[in-house]
Amino acid sequence: MTAIIGLDFGTTNSVISLLDEDGRSETVSFRLGAETLEVFRSVLCFWSDTAKGNALRHEAGPAAIEAYLEDPLASRLIMSMKSHLATASFSETRIFGRAYSLEALIALFLKSLLGASGNPAPDARLVVGRPVRFVGETADDALAERRLRAAFAAAGRENIHLALEPEAAGTRFAATLGGPATVLVGDFGGGTSDFSILRFTPGKGTEALGHAGVGIAGDALDYRIIDNVISPALGKGDTYKVMGTALPVPPAFFSNFAHWHRLSMMRGPKTLREIEEVARLTADPSKLRNLIALIEDEAGYGLYRAVSGAKASLSKAESTVLRFEHEGFAVESPVHRADFEAWIAPDLARMAGAIDAALADAGLPPEGVDKVFLTGGTSLVPAVRQLFDARFGQEKVAGGGEFVSVAEGLALIGRRKG
Image 1 (cartoon, rainbow, N blue to C red):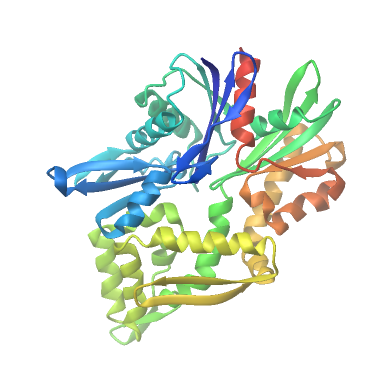
Image 2 (cartoon, rainbow, N blue to C red; image 1 turned 135 degrees about the vertical axis):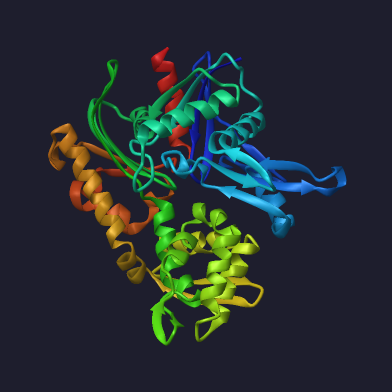
């Protein structure tokens, strides 16, 4: 029987690690055809089953992606649910005419995630990660935590322990240390970048010295690519004329479009009507009508996958080509790492500020940090890694377990709390 569950509910991916009563840990794997995955995509797909009287059905994780790709026009893909937890204005959404609260959507996802992992014992200790700061310009951390707890309760897991995600990653890293050390942990998810400074002493446990976080991470870097490469081809920067006066195409069309967790909210008739009204008054209406088609056809997943792939390529090469096609809209554009790093400079500055805030919270100068451990996919971006190399010295910086270290650390925290 599983004694402890570490559950990393992420913006993009979720991971479960199991720690049994003998202290053996195992990251749960998930099957997708012949493939074995360590991560479970944090998505839901809904569709109306015509063979069963239009009954509303849903899938989660890898199965949701498959269901969506089978018929994108007849389905609704829900992504980045975690990104809305701290947003008070987001209370519910309607899916095929049925209202769902955010907590209900996350509960559906969690039930599927736990089911796919074999439904670990209901009396097991469940340790769940949370960011230092939830994402959102006016993020309400207390609201986000209440909603997260309510979602788990609705999924049948009322008794959960919350732990900071970077502290969990650090706990996992501590197992590799041979002696006491002060470690700065950088945990980069899809929506947040979190930093914790921890003092590890073998035999005595962990002391948290300081924390800081910022609501930007992988999704924000994807946004920069979309905003600079894709959106101009869809009408960003163009003008439309009203009574002879040239006005800029509303930037809000593109700021929402470039954030993948906002795309589903653009499918409302009012928003699509507004875009069409502006399109008719532009010199080239086809651009904004391509934007409408991408929104109506739920083509966002394919676009974001292409953008994320280009970003990953830039971690290894100085340039890449971003390719995307949907019906009459096609992009084949070179993207250079130097340009990408210029686009993400504001995000890097905010990350650097959060690193400094964590040091200030701990009352330490950079020289007081013995080791730096980075985890999460964004930690592989060279410009992000350089933030730490420059401050702490390349020899101190390590990484690993980019997608599983938080879940494994949460399970280890669960053992410590017992």
